[in-house]
Amino acid sequence: MDKPSEQESRERQRAAASAGRAAGYCWVRFGDRRQHCTAPPDHPGKHYDKFVRATLRALAEATAPKAQARGSAR
Image 1 (cartoon, rainbow, N blue to C red):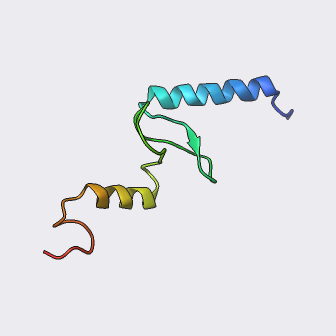
Image 2 (cartoon, rainbow, N blue to C red):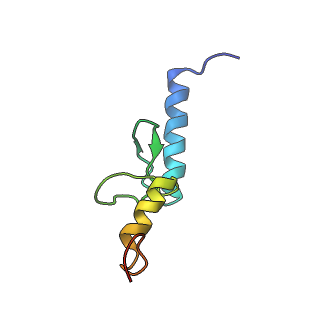
């Protein structure tokens, strides 16, 4: 099997970005692991992948009421 040409690689990347955006995600690549941002398009702030366990935990703790936040006293 031949290695894809640069043009084919660019077209695949463009198609993947279009699919991510069509699904309602920002889809910018970020980080060491080249994750895709799953925040809404044109969001303010940093890029993140909300399906990564550490991000899910941080988002839950940031948005949970104080009584439900991990480690808080009732």
